Length: 472
Image (cartoon, rainbow, N blue to C red; front, side, top):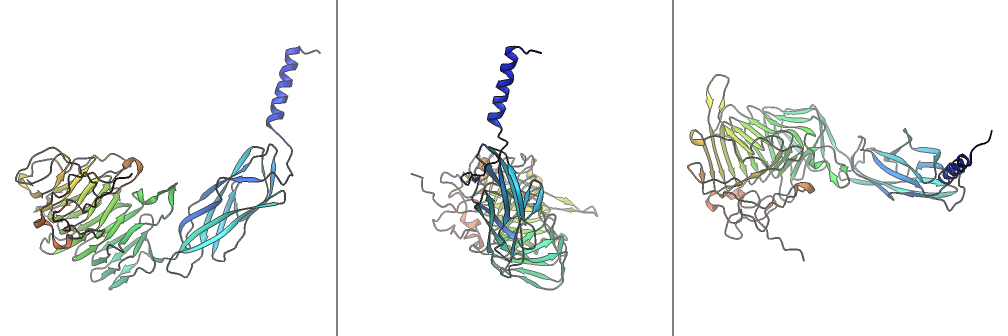
């Protein structure tokens, strides 16, 4: 049977095409080595006795021929660290005869599991990923910072207890501070909360952070989501902090609380004489619901930032609220907030009585993606905003006193770049607009240690303005 000339030409062309694209032979030349997309696989802080996130690297074969990696293994240089590999869906610490086709690549996935370091401070561990091809050895550096922690799982703190800054506390489930106990937390301490973990306090909590050494409440994911983006931007990583009756006298200074599901809650038995919760130079941010919610209690907030929540940033149901030099703002990134930044209202108790709200917001900023305060006439409420900056256009009345309307605080924030810095820019309308008489002594220094009274005038919000030189 004879084939037409055009068919022979097509077959020859196809054969030539495939032979030029696919080379079935293996290269044995020591000049044909591997290429990598990185020379170091670096893990962020890894909690000891708890597996890390998975990192990945790409191994390239730049040759036209297939290449055989005779050995892939972790050198095992550290007795405290274990790096596990995953190649072609198989987990281990060594592999043999891994093939890569010409001009192709494979992924290697790497996990770290670290034994206890027996150290308070993070400890750097280094190892080496070794690959051998055609008699040539190549290395990729593996690094991880191991952090020992103190673990608490469903504990009840029944007597006075002290949390130090020596090493972080890792909390599973819900830790309960009982009615007669006081939990004191030193400056610089860190509390890490596992998924859905929370703290419930019927007693008293004293947080003694400072500008130099704040206290941190956050989730236990210390790695990064992707690239340089950390889990700090993720809400809903853990439960929250709940103060329940008969709690009283909680004082939290220089606390940074972020990434929770429900934020901080505080309720009391309608006692508006004794302060149930006092926040000084704190940051409550990035909540999957509300950053702060209180019911029928007396709460003070001084120099504190309430920022970024799926619902209200703060709501106060009944009770007494005294907020001075605070910033209430919402630039939540996972959805556009539909509720107001601040919600204040009376509360009805189960016996039918009404708990009235009495609230003063002095020298504060209310600014963000949604309306500043719940809609409605405040004539029937004891709610007063004095010397506050608002985004909305409006005018003063009996409840809005000497406010700065239709204004922009010029925060150092770029939502698209995931930069959330609520200090004031040079062009801020909040600069010098505060009333010194409404700035309590405890608010003289903001959480960065900047003196609000240094220039004679008082800036609005949680942060005193510091001039930012223009870039040349």
